[in-house]
Image (cartoon, rainbow, N blue to C red):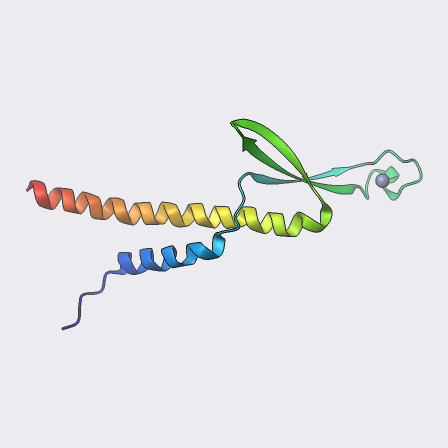
Length: 111
Ligand SMILES: [Zn+2]
């Protein structure tokens, strides 16, 4: 006998299995800033070709911090923060599935 398909549970299982790939996620938000370094003979002195500066804004012990990120790390760090967005989206979907099931169970028991 074939068990009935439960698309919600399939989705939940798929999301749960995808979370391991997000283990390197980082908190905070990625900030890219453009700035002039102040050296008069630098290309940035024209005010257009500015230097890119990267930071993560993150709460540490409840206090907002801006952490400087080296240029060669920027791509990786951006990806890790993006992982956390995917993690949070997956968690929200899983909670939605579970809430629906919880409400159904609650209803079934109270009728
Ligand atoms: Zn410069």
